Length: 425
Image (tube, rainbow, N blue to C red; front, side):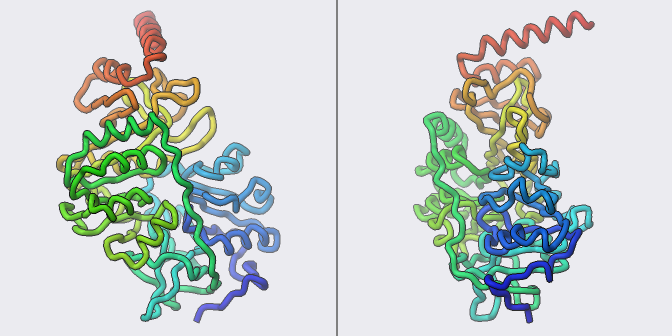
């Protein structure tokens, strides 16, 4: 039987060893009482590592680096403070690769912290808000410590957990964290409207997180029989399921079920997903699998970016020298949509950020997605379908969707680069 923990006498030093790597569910799946205790007791434990996902809390702070080495696949949320302080080791890995890295030991996970929903009548616990890479980690961690939260939603997934899977349990009764409502601007709504016009009835959607995916979902109210196969599920998915827009009835896989890896929303989503067999959370090994995605007809992949250059190269990681994004799953889904029958690979972004154009002549950060994988680029000024186009044709299309105030500047930069290339030759 697992050890029963009590918050007032919680001693994680008896379970976490110096040199261990600790992982927990990202975003709202974070087991806050456990993670906060871990940071508070770090000096008692000694030097150890933490592998982070998206951080919606302020659990991990730069001052904790006196004992903790921080790793992450992304710079999202409060990870940005660690990255800006030079204290975050970035794992530039495709999301689809995380399970294999964990299984091989290249990304060793010694201690796994989970937030679970209470056991059902059969004594089985639900992974609740997230499955994704937690399932592979569960198979390889030396120690599994669970917060069993009375208010966590009980969700359907690939597997449930029994007492035999857990080394220690902390019982709590708290509202899980929630994602704040996105602030959808006029430009986001215009982007959403452009994308909605591209989506056919019966399509299966994959969405990233943020205002643009929310705007797209908000523009799909007149569509019919849409499906979902995505890394994350948000409030917009719940609303469209309740309205009968998302039915999943025309999916070629998992008919009748919205598939995701993690719930990224508010209590509205948590309540809707709880004990709802029409929503199932799966491992990253399934949600991001190339064959699964290719066999999903009419897969529409909608992801964002920091900037896109005029030939279709995409930077989704670095903005103004700060690591804010990730390699993540965008390329997994873009390639999946390209191989899908009737699929549509979309990158959507506002044309500007402050006083800067996000359609650029040259990227200011890494090439997260090469131009050979570019599909459809959307801004509030239109749609540029780059598939099958030459470099010159792409430049013309991309100029058309740049902000009008920056088109002449971008054209001048192109002309200068062309003259420089001629001089070199």
